[in-house]
Image 1 (cartoon, rainbow, N blue to C red):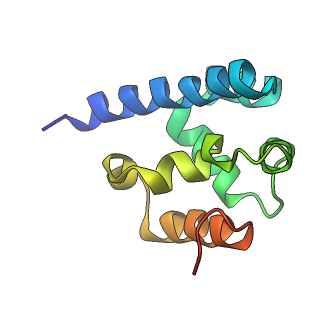
Image 2 (tube, rainbow, N blue to C red):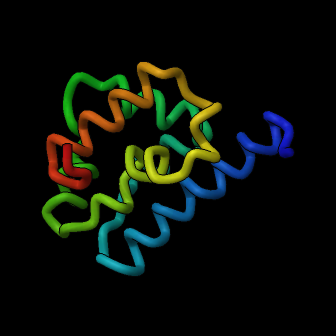
Length: 106
């Protein structure tokens, strides 16, 4: 079983991975997201985006491209490996947001 610090480091890599996939697969350059990752690392960046009262421009851009699978919310929701890094409330916010945009069906 991975240590918490190892899990956090792996999550950082996964967050950088969705940035690079968005760039290479749909041509979306999420500069603000990348800057947040460098400034705050993955978990804190995810928390800031999850707790934002408004959907991020990046989320909207990926929704328009039909690629919500590349959002932070989907990264967390789709892989239970990351769930220990977040509170039940944060996981619920991810799930609710993804349902609202029809990524997951109720």
